[in-house]
Image (cartoon, rainbow, N blue to C red; front, side, top):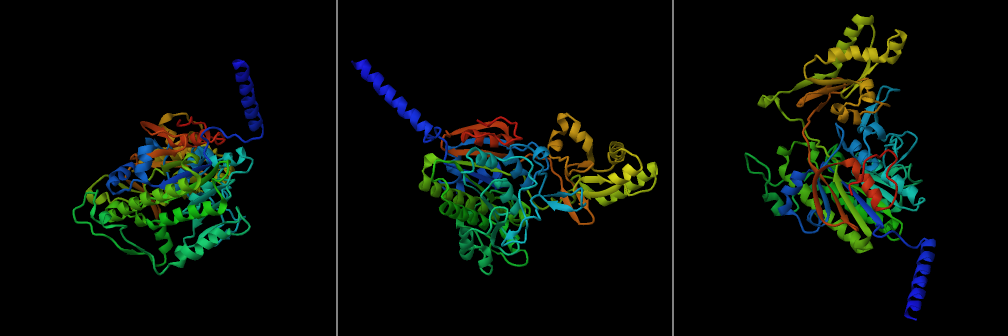
Length: 527
């Protein structure tokens, strides 16, 4: 009799479970209702750990102590900037596949620089910038979430810059929001809406820097920040006070610690207005914070400002975590935090200290190549354009003279390799076809769609100078260590010190929310 009752009870439970599953009412165990994907621009492990005495118990310390921490993350390509970094984070692959080699590149068709999110088909709301993710050529983790939930997920991206917001949101986001550097208002694109949502307008009317243009002052958040010094210095560092004003005030504001408070406030307003995390369908909120130096100055010129930036970041993270956990429950949210993995500072003055360095002039190099190739095949404008360290050959001229692009590039490669400051010269054919592991980072950063016919790799410490634009870029090969941190539902505290690739992050998020990884991602998940 006892066994009969047991079997009847078991069948009843199984029948109820099967019916519930059929009705779609059961979610996978530990699947979060909300993923908060936090990218901190230029975050570094050494600074993160150095300022621990200044942190509260709610921000960085909480994530480091209770999260799954990968201490040695890196990007598998170089050079890196905020656009290429965030695109790789979200797609789980490199610029070679996702097409985002940087914030700007040279258009083969027009021979002019184009922005990575530029899209003249769109209109801007509270901005002159016309932008969309159209140039991003693969799916992102946010795209796959939309597909996996049949469009039910709510996805927003908020960042200081247009490029960071749009690339983080991917193709299928409900919206991307960024600060317009001309008027100081939070803005967006017609790609996402017919008109700017009321919650963004309301936020602007009360909190936008453009509304506070006469009263933006940045000074240390507390006395401890002003008196603590991690950096070596020959003089006493005095607490700072910056009044952010002038023609570039909103550009400067984007590189101040104050921008991070706005990001948190907008994130909270977004959640309250859109209902993110309130149902059983996973939503995603992508946030970009800033941890670089003020006005991209060298660290030696703004040491206390950098300390204050990290302390304010810690406070904002703590405030954000507390708000979200109280709103939807600790068991329903997964936080993921990492860095863009590069540093953007003023060029180091190596010459003063007799450190090997120099300047490689792109225009002079183009003239030299035209003379050399002219001596081989007759006069002509063989170099059509240059951009950064890329040289674009004149394909029409080469076709007219019946010279193959590979032959011309190989001839140019020979003379370029003998020039001062040049460490390596690669042809586009070489980057596309070679399996040589020694050039893997350069290949991963290359795009067959808009890359040059020749890519010049200068020695560390050397600058590449474009005389027409007077833009220069100093090259460094030094490794910047940064973390990947998972904190929240389904995560147990652990510290992993082995090297990992940033391309493993997207598939790890995909696995945690039971969806496919992005369509060009071939990396294994972190866990």
